Image (cartoon, rainbow, N blue to C red; front, side, top):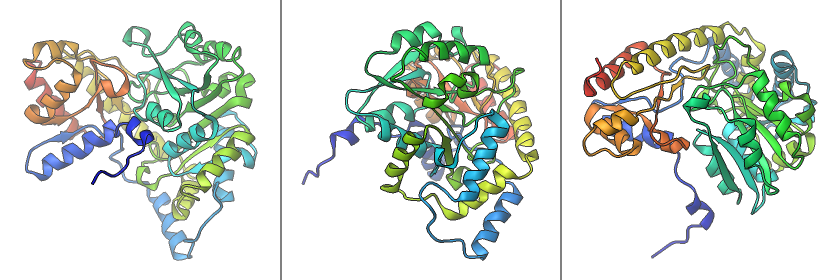
Length: 396
């Protein structure tokens, strides 16, 4: 019996990052010594004051449905965060709380895209952007910027990619997978292009805003380009900088009509985010931010170690990032030097099977010839993994 699978579902691929993580877990369960560096998940525990807020919420019985778009206390905390950190002011009806930033992006695409619409996506990109566009019957239009451009697209590239069918421009800075971040001046240059195309909604994924160490302060696109505020959706969440991945809280601020449409989509899918997680997110956003600084300092130290170590391995070349907890080395030399390996996908397969290190192929991010390594792991784990890579390629 052949059961029907929709054309929509057949368009998309499983998440490469989740697949690699699951594969590493399966191999470990089978007794193979595999170090998985595929997941973008901090190894830190959620800070104690955030967990305590959730415990208190459970004990007082805060376990019922909430408003679809989030509890008032959390929306107020998000409004305060946007004003404090980004100098962006939103009314309550311009805020939507979702089950992770991934749902925020899904809601946005479902709310504004129709068949035939195009979504311009700088590449390398987070693996889910193109597939979420496809699930919304739209066409992803990748725009590639290699390491020679610092993995950042130029205004000329953006202008050339926008067509009368373009409805959404999706920007992620600092970037998963590259760690590259746009400066205020670079955002303003992109903004000058976007200002000429009034049919384009702009989405900025700022999830790694506080995992950041460039000399210039972090800047969001709507902050750099206030004239684009009325058609920019600024997306963020608590998963990464507060080590709250499993709590599943993302949020955004944007134009009220777009937010209202996104709320309708969410109301017919998950309804409200988890009540307990919302209370925890209030504690995260309104509470002491020392935990964020502590984790960011640790990620910067790991970044420095990993980038330096990768650049010592034969066949690897890695650009230093400005943020996130990912390294994205060019491994074309390692591919050429490995018998039976012709591309980054085959190299990743070789590494997990023969070297015992699980990394994500760059092709999943629109960048063939690269691998993504997450350094959201302990220093000891990273040292062991890098040591295995070095031994495999005679680099150390």
